[in-house]
Length: 192
Image 1 (cartoon, rainbow, N blue to C red):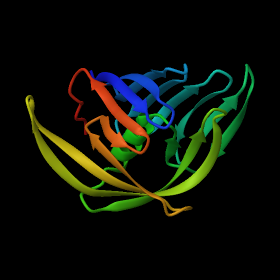
Image 2 (cartoon, rainbow, N blue to C red):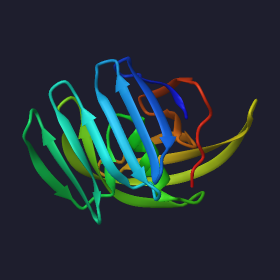
Image 3 (cartoon, helix red, strand yellow):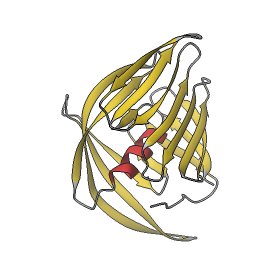
């Protein structure tokens, strides 16, 4: 079970995480140094079936329900329910990049355009955006424990045209915009 630390380079926040395959999919849990908590569960097809984000004032709980993404957003006990025809969530935590990349099942040099609900901090405001994910290449790096395949994605925000790069190995982000992996205590899991 990989455990480690991501650093959010724009604010210097640390995100301590652990992730592992579960009975029907995969789970990621983390806590940042500003006490933001993320708990994401995906099914065997990597669909985001349960997502929870908690800040000091706001929380969101939701997941994919058929063709829709449903969630409740609140600043206290009672919240407002929302629905959107979207593929999943995208937020500051690397968990969401991993889940989206894995759920696309792209082959090298193929791409997909998808609608995602982008959650912004600190209020967890939701905005639906269109993104293009392209698996540019897969490379293999030799390590002490054997070959390590790394997927290089080009991710484009179609509203702005901004392109970013995400490097992923198994269920661990190696690098992404504003994210740096600084500690990893065990190798990534390689799940279908």
